Image (cartoon, rainbow, N blue to C red; front, side, top):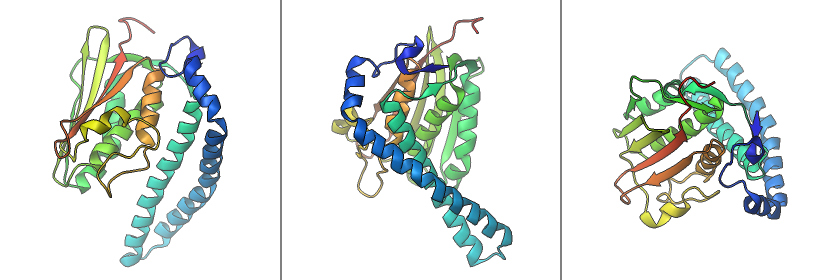
Amino acid sequence: MFVGSDSGWPAPGFGPKAQARGNDRAPEHALVWTVAHELRQPLSAMTTAVAVMEHDSSGGATAHAIGVMRRQLQQMSRMVDDLVDAARLSTGKVSLVPQRLDLREVMTEAAADVAAEAAKRGQLLDLKDGAAPLWVTGDRQRLYQVFSNLLRNAIKFTDHGGRITFTADSHFSRIAVRVRDTGCGIDRQALPRIFDLFTQVQPSGLGGAGIGLSVAREIVSLHRGRIEAHSEGLGKGSEFEVTLPASPAGGS
């Protein structure tokens, strides 16, 4: 197990300067964590209640209303989890459990998790991860979190009938994973701050809370990798690229 930069993995963003910034905002981060943590209990209770209602539902309008409630609760739960992670990551308190893994398996899992959501919007989700294993050393669940976040983002900001391409390839000692979409794109002037916490740069009415991308950046940094956003501008789609160090052949 490794935590932040104390693990022996030098992670960008968690050096002395970053820690100083984290200390300056410690009260703010503590408040965010407390609020998010307190929200988990009522969300859990409501999720359980919806499950009971689903079991007893006679169908029709009631079943439709329950479906809406479940989807909204899932979205709220993900947002709360992201808030907790953002607060922990900002103070270097997230523990990772590294293992040698084939990144294609994580990609397949993340794509399967969002497939129904993409299909509902009539979008084509195209997974291309190649035939050869893509070995990395990292935390499986956290890497899944990064890819799931990027895919859900692409689905959210891509019109009905759009296309999302999820690809990976290796080049010498690095592995690059890309999520490309045909969606609304990103203003070039906004690209430098796209990963800042609580930053909203998408067109009005589409922006989220500005948490997921910040969390993704910090997780990737902990894996000694980097994440970048590319777009030719509004209306021209976008691409997010995650680059990770490949695990040496025969490594453990």
